[in-house]
Figure 1 (cartoon, one colour):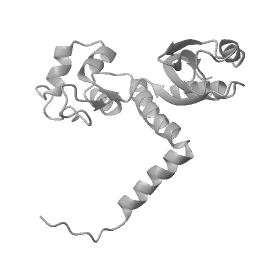
Figure 2 (figure 1 turned 90 degrees about the vertical axis):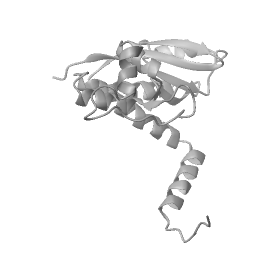
Figure 3 (figure 1 turned 90 degrees about the horizontal axis):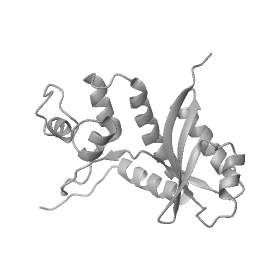
Length: 190
């Protein structure tokens, strides 16, 4: 028999707001009694603490339940976010900012240095992919629980899939992909 564990995540919704009649009751009837409903800046999000056999099963079952309510809610993303700042890395790992800063500056573990940031390079707060950070931490045995790595990987890919559910976004992305895969005959003049 598979072991059930508690998984915490947040679903961000579209198609409903704080004025949606009976939203709380509909979510309760859809077996989302393990979620706390929140409203912020016109957005509805649900903080789940769901018992399941895996993070994947917990999130997929929650999305199916939420999207099955009569109000017409649609899940547009899953949190925690994939892009993280140095401060967020420290917060998630319950480490000091100084410890994370040493990793980021590559002052520690130089044989396999910390991943490079992927965004915000011209800002004071560059950002890293959480999945790459967790992979690095796992390789260095700074986190031993592989479920953290599995969770980061799943959420990153699930968010990409959620974005692809919109036909316009999917078509636009696939157009870019097709163009990138075509050989180019363009020569640039310097």
